[in-house]
Image 1 (cartoon, rainbow, N blue to C red):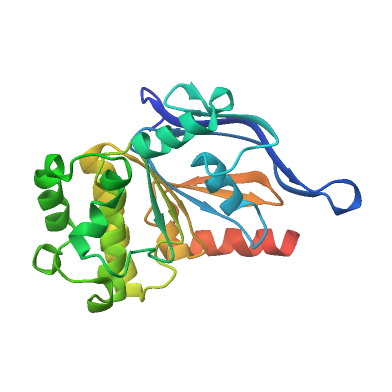
Image 2: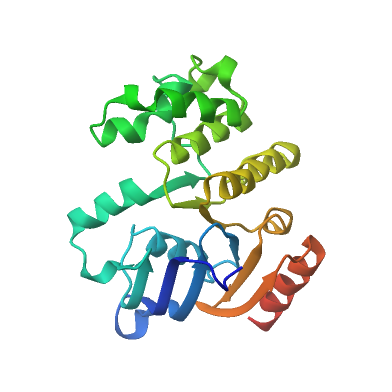
Length: 249
């Protein structure tokens, strides 16, 4: 996929260190990766491997200790906090394990929240809102509050919210972690369809081999380093690679 494709996100020699002296923890070490436009990539590794740290840095939610993150040709290291905030709003969408919906808002109001935060008129998104609610199968649940929705429906609201402003990149942190296998499979299908339909790059951290097998590529981390890449691996292959990494650790 990378040949001939634009690079949506790139890291160059990325490292993240917490603490000093004997308490120093290297969360990431010399990570260099390229994620082409419209790729659905999963990031996996044993507990403490650095996968969530990597996702947060890719999403400009945290800064590296050294190295660079380049999003659509823009080097994030040269941006002020204000410009980083604008970049997140304009080019990124986030889907988390815990849905983070506002309990007093309806499904459609939660979907429109990024536009409200950006001080935009929600009317300009009416057509997009209808399209997304149809995509996630919640047209008839649009006026329901989160406590009136199932877990799967809440996660689909969260996905529609991440997509409402047409971001280039979707960052998903354990998006199926709180869902049963059938509902989780539906959420993964939505993410894949989004990547294909809207030409978006999906970067997903997961511990679930079945979820990772939905991705075009799986990046494996161990002790903060990239140790393996696999394109279109099956769940059994992914599980075996994870077991090998845990044994080596």
